[in-house]
Amino acid sequence: MNGEKNIIPRLGRRDFLKAATASALLISARPRPANATPESTLDAIGKATGSREPVMGRVNLTLPEIAENGSTVSLKVDVESPMTTDDYVQSVHIFADGNPLPEVADYYFGPHNGVAKLSIRMRLMQTQNVIAVAKMNNGDTYMASRMIKVTIGGCGG
Image (cartoon, rainbow, N blue to C red; front, top):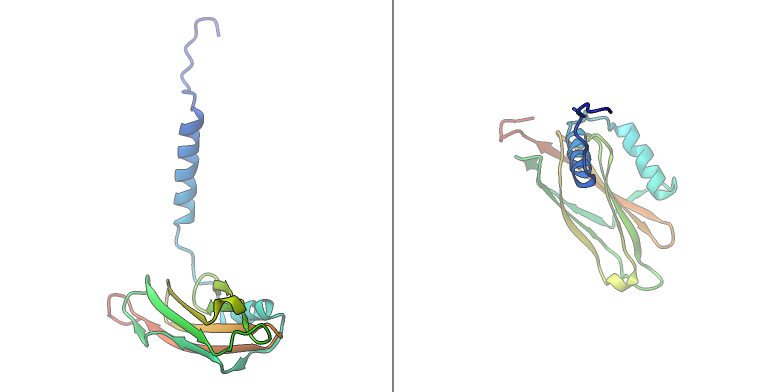
C-alpha cells in the first residue's frame, strides 16, 4: 500500500455478527401478505394427518368470538382422550386460513402427559377460520373449527 491509507474500515468478528443479526431482524420483520387460503390450509392439514380425513368431534376449541387485537389472541385446545398406552393423542396441529402461512403450531403428546390440553396466544392478521386437528396413536384424526372476527382497535375488520 506504499503509505496509502486504507479508507475502508475493517469489521471485527463481533461487529460483523452484530450487523448480520440486525440485518436479519430487519428482513424478517417485514410484513408478509396473507397467502394462506382455505385450499392451502386443507393441503397443510392433509400433510399433518397423512391425508387421513379428520372427523368433527373429540376436539374442543376455545377462542373469543371477536378479537379486538389480532396480535395476541388466546386459544385453548382440549382433546377428549383417556391418554392410556392403548388410546392417546399423538399430536395436535393448529391452522389459520388467513395468515401468511396456514400452519400456526404443532404439539406432540403421549400417554405420559395424562391429558391433552394446551393454551397459547397467537397472531391473526384478519377475520378467519382457526382449525385444531388432533391425531390419535391409531391414526384416527379429529378436528374442530371456529371463525374468529379480528378487529383493528375494535373498529371492525
